[in-house]
Image 1 (cartoon, rainbow, N blue to C red):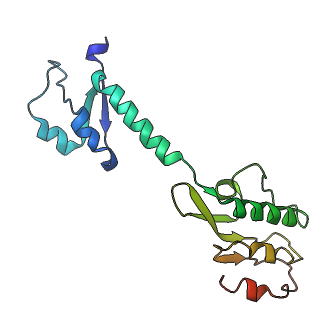
Image 2 (image 1 turned 120 degrees about the vertical axis):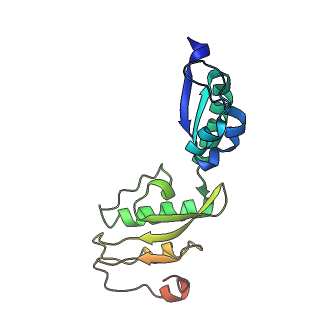
Image 3 (image 1 turned 30 degrees about the horizontal axis):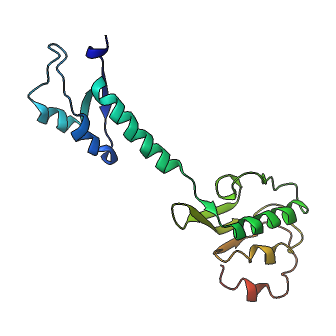
Length: 172
């Protein structure tokens, strides 16, 4: 029986605009709008009937889609990360970066920051404990101008490439 069907929801603070749109406290016994709404508001419980379901669904869909839009790396950083991946994969089998996936969301050891709603940048690379013996990949990593830190601990690196500190002097 659709007219008598209802949902009981507890709203998060980000959804309070829906409070005005969908606040229909209905008594279970009479199916009439209750006059004592202050008790319902204090409890944070809102009873929504189906007249409100469509606007609620629309609002929640917009919130979900806007929060799930992922930002991407610039083309320059994508290219650098792909080259870095090739260089590392030629040295070790412990790197399993998928070239077809987003480095920020799925590459292990890659940390990114959102620069804007549509753009991310690489801020940290961790190559810890990968059995690396050759540091030739480091200058490639330093081409990422937003890079703040590189972790190469627990590897077997024996040298640092010439000019590394000049090129990568800004990282820690």
